[in-house]
Image (cartoon, rainbow, N blue to C red):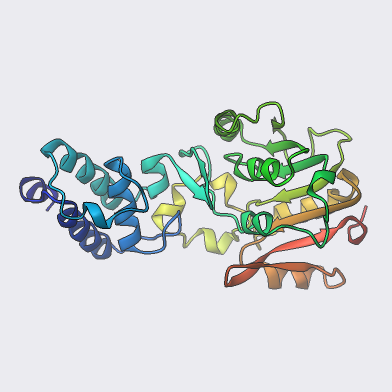
Length: 298
């Protein structure tokens, strides 16, 4: 079918219709930047043709050179045949207005913590300039560390990850945002290599997928590093370790934000006496909790 397309399809409209049909036919899974076949097809076509990502309509009837059409079809074919997430095909992912380089060494950024940072944490941090130190645990691509640096302009930020390959990607993103003097990628198993450092804000989007859910992930998600996804039997293995050790790494008025996916009920059952504050997540079930230092334990 793709060989026929190379011979006959010449406009952006042609390619868009063809892509949506093939994506629906293949029952692709989304969630790495887009939520449906149409949006994903439009994004891949515009990106491959080096067109503005928010301006599809003016180009729909543009006729493409053979080489341009073939470049688009190469990308579409890989998306269907190999079930590669769109972000790995384009080597970019977005959190709001922030673009990050990504590849198979890191999970594709999609944390609801980004929303919390964008909306602000004024109830806990009235003055953003008061934050001097911040930490992103399980940083992956470094995306949340970079957002922390923008949210708290006077803060020095540590970006911790157990994966050396992931930290290579984080280094690249930190350099692209010209933040090397403020954001420090650190190879560390959670807090293990951070010594006695204390932070005003700690955030983490750790592995939280349960063992049973790992077995049913779509092919696109299985292309991401298992180390960044698998959270043990109930999905809370890494979260428990964070909770056990976070207090000694927070300043007196420090706060901890952790994303747990669909693990809210399991977490509240495991810690019935802890007053988790659950932050809004754009209509999705609340998956990010906030705790103040005094709510944690030694």
